[in-house]
Length: 223
Image (cartoon, rainbow, N blue to C red; front, side, top):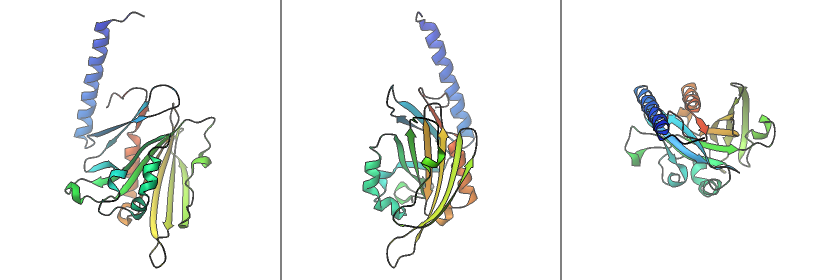
């Protein structure tokens, strides 16, 4: 098929206008922050993973932040080396810390973490294969699975983690979403140890963020 410069220019002009309109709409709705991450796969060029955040929240690379962030959950600080290693594993898209932006940057506490992992499935999805498992320090856990749509499952998990002799167990809330996209399985996990982040409003916030997510071979028209 011959290349037509005017058609090419027109298409990109339309896409650009659509992106500007989408960004304006999101900003007016209080969801102006747009984030994009490359997704490596076995063959072909990397995919693009995108999400949006509401005003007042930021996501920061957790490895750069964990050791120094005020209020960082104990498992984040103690697991710094493991997180650095995890970021190098195939399929890991993002390991981030969630912080409020209503205070100066140096005073912002970590209120939760968000991890995104991409898996190219070798057959039908078995949700049981991707359920969170108890660790060596887990003293109690309970989780339930909800199918949110034909392609999305939500896993709600409450656990307590031992911090050592003489210390109170650490409460842990994990909300994981398994999204069977056209390209593979995207697992999005939000995690917190803060009691003020364990209510229904926060769970709804995380689900709203999940619903803005996109994966594809090209940037979305809302990027």
